[in-house]
Length: 393
Image 1 (tube, helix red, strand yellow):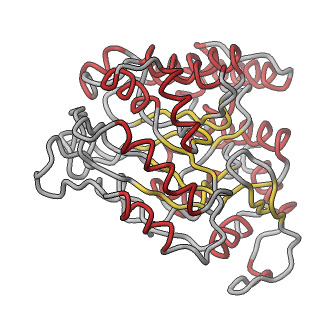
Image 2: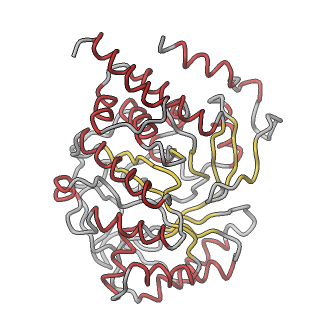
């Protein structure tokens, strides 16, 4: 296509977005290939601001990864160990799991994010008791635990339906599901990078079941391995279709591939440009999913700041002690303080909003000074917005 034809096509796509019309598969592929990244970002920013204004959300959370022993042999994974006793393999005792929360008893944590390997060498009660010991210590805390891949594994390993496994986990304290394990839905890609775990259809069915039970969940997409742009857009459309059906997804989280320590280590990491475009395309394609999250621990603090002008309205939380991406070479900090996150958001010209897991607002920034934050160094929101708009004229 010529530049003039591209520009005309972009205006047509922008008109659809502004009219609230869902974008088609070809629109998504076009947005990935349209050379003016800033124009795509500005259009995504329009949607973001229509939905959330200048707010950027975060929460006070931490991660527990109770075991990295895993029966799935994913090519991209640096975290898993296939058998107990392998170098760096571990499985926490219930006392160790409880101790992770005891260590943070004086912190205002509202959420624990729990993801593990698929460890069939422990009884089903170990998984339910993992939740139970945490809720006994802090009944008010929200447990966002176990990906759809884990739920599928539980059902197969312990002879349960998805609904039965979820009911027993809810009885033990489960509050919602994280979105991991989706990777890329395309069969071609899954055969190459994750052939021995839950299929795309099974992943979607777990979330469908959870949503019908009243549980909320997140959804993800792993990008930067061997998938095509067309396969990324197809992935988004399949998430959008389930959201049309159930309305249970809260946020879409693109996950950048990290190559260190796994069998895809010859592949480069996704660039910042690829990440920003993926956030923007995700915001534009997934009109029915309320939030787009940039997981700062994976893409870095600088890109996370910029992503707030490319459709992103959520930066996750304080995290603390993340293992999965750091074992794959992430060089971001292991933890961010509440003040640090507020500064990250303020300096991007946005208004920080502390939320709980279900996006109920706990605190909203009124611009007053906080310890360690120089307000005069922050970019006023109105100046920030003008700069973005002018850059694409």
